[in-house]
Picture 1 (tube, helix red, strand yellow):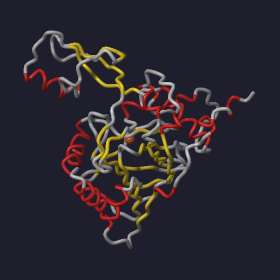
Picture 2 (cartoon, helix red, strand yellow):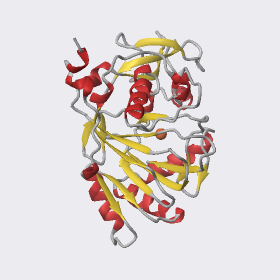
Picture 3 (tube, helix red, strand yellow):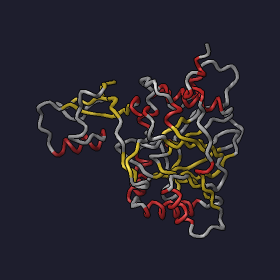
Picture 4 (tube, helix red, strand yellow):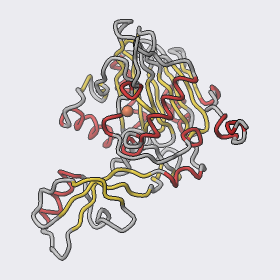
Length: 322
Ligand SMILES: [Fe+2]
Protein backbone atom coordinates (compact mmCIF):
# COMPACT_ATOMS: atom_id res chain seq x y z
CA UNK A 1 0.00 0.00 0.00
CA UNK A 2 1.32 3.44 -0.84
CA UNK A 3 0.86 5.45 2.34
CA UNK A 4 1.92 8.65 0.56
CA UNK A 5 -1.47 8.85 -1.13
CA UNK A 6 -3.44 8.25 2.04
CA UNK A 7 -2.47 11.60 3.46
CA UNK A 8 -3.46 14.56 1.23
CA UNK A 9 -1.07 16.83 3.18
CA UNK A 10 1.89 14.60 2.33
CA UNK A 11 1.39 15.06 -1.41
CA UNK A 12 0.28 18.68 -1.33
CA UNK A 13 2.91 21.09 -2.63
CA UNK A 14 2.93 24.69 -1.48
CA UNK A 15 1.17 26.42 -4.42
CA UNK A 16 2.70 29.40 -6.21
CA UNK A 17 0.12 32.22 -6.01
CA UNK A 18 1.11 35.21 -8.14
CA UNK A 19 -2.12 37.06 -7.28
CA UNK A 20 -0.35 37.93 -4.03
CA UNK A 21 2.37 39.86 -5.88
CA UNK A 22 1.93 43.51 -6.86
CA UNK A 23 4.54 44.80 -9.34
CA UNK A 24 5.08 48.55 -9.67
CA UNK A 25 7.30 50.06 -12.35
CA UNK A 26 8.75 53.56 -12.45
CA UNK A 27 5.70 54.97 -14.27
CA UNK A 28 3.52 54.45 -11.18
CA UNK A 29 2.86 57.62 -9.26
CA UNK A 30 1.88 57.45 -5.59
CA UNK A 31 4.12 54.42 -5.12
CA UNK A 32 4.09 54.62 -1.32
CA UNK A 33 0.28 54.67 -1.24
CA UNK A 34 0.16 51.61 -3.51
CA UNK A 35 2.70 49.76 -1.37
CA UNK A 36 0.77 50.51 1.83
CA UNK A 37 -2.49 49.31 0.28
CA UNK A 38 -0.93 46.07 -0.97
CA UNK A 39 0.65 45.36 2.44
CA UNK A 40 -2.74 45.84 4.11
CA UNK A 41 -4.09 43.22 1.66
CA UNK A 42 -1.24 40.94 2.80
CA UNK A 43 0.41 41.08 -0.63
CA UNK A 44 4.10 41.33 -1.48
CA UNK A 45 5.19 44.38 -3.47
CA UNK A 46 7.98 44.42 -6.04
CA UNK A 47 9.08 47.88 -7.19
CA UNK A 48 11.28 47.85 -10.31
CA UNK A 49 14.16 50.13 -11.32
CA UNK A 50 14.78 51.78 -7.96
CA UNK A 51 18.08 53.47 -7.04
CA UNK A 52 19.62 52.63 -3.68
CA UNK A 53 18.92 56.16 -2.45
CA UNK A 54 15.25 55.85 -3.48
CA UNK A 55 15.05 52.46 -1.76
CA UNK A 56 16.01 54.16 1.53
CA UNK A 57 13.46 56.96 0.98
CA UNK A 58 10.61 54.62 0.03
CA UNK A 59 11.35 52.29 2.97
CA UNK A 60 11.28 55.25 5.35
CA UNK A 61 7.93 56.51 3.99
CA UNK A 62 6.30 53.08 4.18
CA UNK A 63 7.63 52.50 7.71
CA UNK A 64 6.44 55.95 8.79
CA UNK A 65 2.95 55.22 7.50
CA UNK A 66 2.70 52.29 9.92
CA UNK A 67 4.36 54.18 12.80
CA UNK A 68 7.52 52.08 12.40
CA UNK A 69 10.03 54.82 11.52
CA UNK A 70 11.70 54.73 14.95
CA UNK A 71 11.96 50.94 14.76
CA UNK A 72 13.56 51.30 11.30
CA UNK A 73 16.21 53.68 12.70
CA UNK A 74 16.90 51.39 15.67
CA UNK A 75 17.27 48.25 13.53
CA UNK A 76 19.65 50.05 11.14
CA UNK A 77 21.62 51.31 14.15
CA UNK A 78 21.91 47.83 15.66
CA UNK A 79 23.00 46.19 12.41
CA UNK A 80 26.70 46.83 12.71
CA UNK A 81 26.72 46.73 16.53
CA UNK A 82 25.75 43.05 16.44
CA UNK A 83 28.68 42.49 14.10
CA UNK A 84 27.17 40.18 11.49
CA UNK A 85 25.83 42.85 9.15
CA UNK A 86 27.15 46.08 7.63
CA UNK A 87 25.09 49.20 6.98
CA UNK A 88 24.76 50.22 3.35
CA UNK A 89 23.13 53.61 2.89
CA UNK A 90 20.72 54.75 5.59
CA UNK A 91 18.48 51.81 6.43
CA UNK A 92 19.61 48.86 4.35
CA UNK A 93 22.29 46.39 5.46
CA UNK A 94 24.16 43.41 4.09
CA UNK A 95 22.53 39.99 4.58
CA UNK A 96 24.16 37.27 6.68
CA UNK A 97 27.23 35.59 5.25
CA UNK A 98 26.87 32.14 3.74
CA UNK A 99 29.19 29.39 2.54
CA UNK A 100 29.30 28.11 -1.04
CA UNK A 101 26.10 26.19 -1.93
CA UNK A 102 24.30 27.31 1.23
CA UNK A 103 20.57 27.94 1.04
CA UNK A 104 18.79 30.14 3.58
CA UNK A 105 15.70 28.29 4.85
CA UNK A 106 12.44 30.20 5.29
CA UNK A 107 12.09 32.38 8.37
CA UNK A 108 10.61 35.67 9.55
CA UNK A 109 13.39 38.02 10.62
CA UNK A 110 14.16 38.17 14.33
CA UNK A 111 12.15 36.83 17.23
CA UNK A 112 8.88 37.32 19.10
CA UNK A 113 10.83 39.62 21.43
CA UNK A 114 12.12 41.83 18.60
CA UNK A 115 8.77 41.93 16.76
CA UNK A 116 10.02 43.31 13.44
CA UNK A 117 6.88 44.06 11.45
CA UNK A 118 8.09 45.10 8.01
CA UNK A 119 10.76 43.51 5.80
CA UNK A 120 12.31 44.94 2.65
CA UNK A 121 14.97 43.62 0.27
CA UNK A 122 16.88 45.54 -2.37
CA UNK A 123 18.89 43.86 -5.12
CA UNK A 124 22.12 45.61 -6.07
CA UNK A 125 23.02 42.76 -8.42
CA UNK A 126 22.12 39.11 -8.95
CA UNK A 127 23.70 37.27 -11.85
CA UNK A 128 24.09 33.82 -10.28
CA UNK A 129 22.47 30.63 -11.61
CA UNK A 130 20.22 30.47 -8.48
CA UNK A 131 19.75 32.81 -5.54
CA UNK A 132 15.97 33.05 -5.99
CA UNK A 133 13.94 34.64 -3.21
CA UNK A 134 11.15 32.29 -2.16
CA UNK A 135 8.58 34.09 -0.03
CA UNK A 136 6.08 31.97 1.89
CA UNK A 137 2.70 33.25 3.06
CA UNK A 138 2.02 31.89 6.52
CA UNK A 139 -1.07 29.78 7.11
CA UNK A 140 -2.12 31.21 10.42
CA UNK A 141 -4.98 28.75 10.90
CA UNK A 142 -2.89 25.59 10.69
CA UNK A 143 -3.00 23.42 13.81
CA UNK A 144 0.71 22.72 13.17
CA UNK A 145 1.73 25.88 15.05
CA UNK A 146 0.99 23.93 18.22
CA UNK A 147 3.90 21.57 17.38
CA UNK A 148 6.48 24.35 17.14
CA UNK A 149 8.56 26.00 19.85
CA UNK A 150 10.70 29.14 19.97
CA UNK A 151 14.21 29.10 21.40
CA UNK A 152 14.50 31.94 23.92
CA UNK A 153 16.49 32.82 27.01
CA UNK A 154 14.72 32.64 30.35
CA UNK A 155 15.90 32.93 33.92
CA UNK A 156 15.36 31.59 37.41
CA UNK A 157 16.07 34.04 40.21
CA UNK A 158 14.78 32.08 43.22
CA UNK A 159 14.25 34.37 46.20
CA UNK A 160 16.79 36.93 45.03
CA UNK A 161 15.52 40.50 44.83
CA UNK A 162 17.00 42.02 41.69
CA UNK A 163 18.18 45.62 41.59
CA UNK A 164 17.05 47.89 38.69
CA UNK A 165 20.64 47.70 37.36
CA UNK A 166 20.59 43.89 37.36
CA UNK A 167 17.19 43.84 35.63
CA UNK A 168 18.59 46.20 32.97
CA UNK A 169 21.69 44.02 32.57
CA UNK A 170 19.55 40.93 31.89
CA UNK A 171 17.59 42.87 29.29
CA UNK A 172 20.59 44.45 27.56
CA UNK A 173 22.77 41.33 27.46
CA UNK A 174 20.19 38.56 27.02
CA UNK A 175 16.97 40.32 26.01
CA UNK A 176 15.32 38.92 29.13
CA UNK A 177 12.29 40.92 30.24
CA UNK A 178 11.04 40.38 33.75
CA UNK A 179 8.68 39.05 34.97
CA UNK A 180 7.60 37.63 31.54
CA UNK A 181 10.82 35.68 30.99
CA UNK A 182 10.93 33.77 34.26
CA UNK A 183 11.31 30.05 33.59
CA UNK A 184 8.01 28.17 33.84
CA UNK A 185 7.11 24.49 33.87
CA UNK A 186 6.07 24.42 30.18
CA UNK A 187 9.59 25.42 29.07
CA UNK A 188 12.01 22.74 27.93
CA UNK A 189 15.57 23.54 28.97
CA UNK A 190 18.08 22.98 26.16
CA UNK A 191 21.28 24.39 27.66
CA UNK A 192 22.82 26.76 30.17
CA UNK A 193 22.66 30.37 28.97
CA UNK A 194 25.53 31.89 31.01
CA UNK A 195 24.46 34.51 33.55
CA UNK A 196 25.89 38.03 34.00
CA UNK A 197 24.14 38.38 37.40
CA UNK A 198 25.11 36.46 40.57
CA UNK A 199 22.30 34.29 41.94
CA UNK A 200 20.37 34.26 38.63
CA UNK A 201 20.40 31.17 36.40
CA UNK A 202 19.86 31.68 32.68
CA UNK A 203 18.78 28.92 30.31
CA UNK A 204 18.18 28.48 26.61
CA UNK A 205 14.69 27.03 26.50
CA UNK A 206 12.06 25.98 23.99
CA UNK A 207 8.84 27.80 24.81
CA UNK A 208 5.33 27.50 23.40
CA UNK A 209 4.46 29.95 20.65
CA UNK A 210 2.43 33.06 21.19
CA UNK A 211 0.78 35.12 18.50
CA UNK A 212 2.19 38.60 17.94
CA UNK A 213 0.21 41.71 16.96
CA UNK A 214 0.69 42.74 13.34
CA UNK A 215 0.60 46.52 12.98
CA UNK A 216 0.04 46.13 9.22
CA UNK A 217 -2.86 43.65 9.40
CA UNK A 218 -4.26 44.95 12.71
CA UNK A 219 -4.59 41.46 14.17
CA UNK A 220 -2.58 38.89 16.10
CA UNK A 221 -0.77 36.26 14.05
CA UNK A 222 1.80 33.50 14.22
CA UNK A 223 5.18 34.30 12.70
CA UNK A 224 7.83 31.74 11.74
CA UNK A 225 10.58 33.60 13.59
CA UNK A 226 14.23 32.82 12.97
CA UNK A 227 14.26 31.65 16.61
CA UNK A 228 11.71 28.96 15.62
CA UNK A 229 12.80 28.08 12.09
CA UNK A 230 16.57 27.93 12.64
CA UNK A 231 16.48 25.61 15.66
CA UNK A 232 14.22 22.85 14.34
CA UNK A 233 15.75 20.11 12.16
CA UNK A 234 12.39 19.68 10.41
CA UNK A 235 12.50 23.28 9.20
CA UNK A 236 15.77 22.61 7.34
CA UNK A 237 14.45 19.33 5.93
CA UNK A 238 11.14 20.87 4.90
CA UNK A 239 12.90 23.65 3.04
CA UNK A 240 15.34 21.22 1.43
CA UNK A 241 12.36 19.18 0.14
CA UNK A 242 10.74 22.36 -1.19
CA UNK A 243 13.87 23.30 -3.18
CA UNK A 244 14.33 19.75 -4.43
CA UNK A 245 10.72 19.32 -5.55
CA UNK A 246 10.83 22.75 -7.25
CA UNK A 247 14.05 21.70 -9.09
CA UNK A 248 15.85 24.67 -7.55
CA UNK A 249 18.53 22.86 -5.57
CA UNK A 250 22.17 23.14 -6.68
CA UNK A 251 24.25 20.20 -5.46
CA UNK A 252 28.05 20.00 -5.66
CA UNK A 253 29.50 16.88 -7.32
CA UNK A 254 29.88 13.92 -4.96
CA UNK A 255 27.90 15.44 -2.07
CA UNK A 256 26.52 12.84 0.31
CA UNK A 257 25.55 14.88 3.35
CA UNK A 258 22.81 17.32 2.31
CA UNK A 259 22.75 18.99 5.72
CA UNK A 260 25.94 20.82 4.69
CA UNK A 261 23.78 22.93 2.31
CA UNK A 262 21.62 24.25 5.16
CA UNK A 263 22.89 27.62 6.39
CA UNK A 264 21.19 27.17 9.78
CA UNK A 265 22.12 23.52 10.39
CA UNK A 266 24.71 24.22 13.11
CA UNK A 267 22.09 25.98 15.24
CA UNK A 268 19.42 23.27 15.12
CA UNK A 269 18.71 21.53 18.44
CA UNK A 270 15.43 19.58 18.19
CA UNK A 271 12.92 17.93 15.89
CA UNK A 272 9.39 19.31 16.09
CA UNK A 273 7.81 16.71 13.78
CA UNK A 274 5.91 19.58 12.13
CA UNK A 275 4.18 19.11 8.78
CA UNK A 276 6.20 21.86 7.08
CA UNK A 277 3.91 22.39 4.09
CA UNK A 278 0.91 23.04 6.37
CA UNK A 279 2.60 26.13 7.77
CA UNK A 280 2.18 28.01 4.50
CA UNK A 281 -0.78 28.94 2.30
CA UNK A 282 1.22 29.74 -0.83
CA UNK A 283 4.56 30.99 -2.08
CA UNK A 284 6.07 33.51 -4.45
CA UNK A 285 9.32 32.77 -6.26
CA UNK A 286 11.27 35.73 -7.62
CA UNK A 287 14.83 36.03 -8.83
CA UNK A 288 15.53 39.64 -7.96
CA UNK A 289 17.27 41.75 -10.59
CA UNK A 290 19.40 44.86 -10.03
CA UNK A 291 17.15 47.72 -8.88
CA UNK A 292 14.34 45.47 -7.55
CA UNK A 293 12.90 46.54 -4.20
CA UNK A 294 10.57 44.18 -2.32
CA UNK A 295 8.27 44.80 0.64
CA UNK A 296 6.40 42.29 2.79
CA UNK A 297 4.83 41.90 6.21
CA UNK A 298 7.58 40.23 8.29
CA UNK A 299 4.99 38.37 10.41
CA UNK A 300 2.76 36.92 7.70
CA UNK A 301 5.52 36.21 5.15
CA UNK A 302 8.68 34.17 5.67
CA UNK A 303 11.65 34.81 3.37
CA UNK A 304 14.26 32.38 2.07
CA UNK A 305 16.92 32.08 -0.64
CA UNK A 306 17.74 29.14 -2.89
CA UNK A 307 21.41 28.27 -3.36
CA UNK A 308 23.58 28.78 -6.44
CA UNK A 309 26.74 27.42 -8.01
CA UNK A 310 29.85 29.24 -6.78
CA UNK A 311 31.42 31.53 -9.42
CA UNK A 312 28.27 31.42 -11.58
CA UNK A 313 27.81 35.15 -10.96
CA UNK A 314 27.54 37.73 -8.22
CA UNK A 315 24.68 38.30 -5.80
CA UNK A 316 24.31 41.32 -3.56
CA UNK A 317 20.93 41.75 -1.93
CA UNK A 318 20.43 44.17 0.98
CA UNK A 319 17.80 44.01 3.71
CA UNK A 320 16.00 46.53 5.93
CA UNK A 321 13.61 45.83 8.79
CA UNK A 322 11.26 47.89 10.92
FE1 LIG B 1 16.48 36.83 7.09
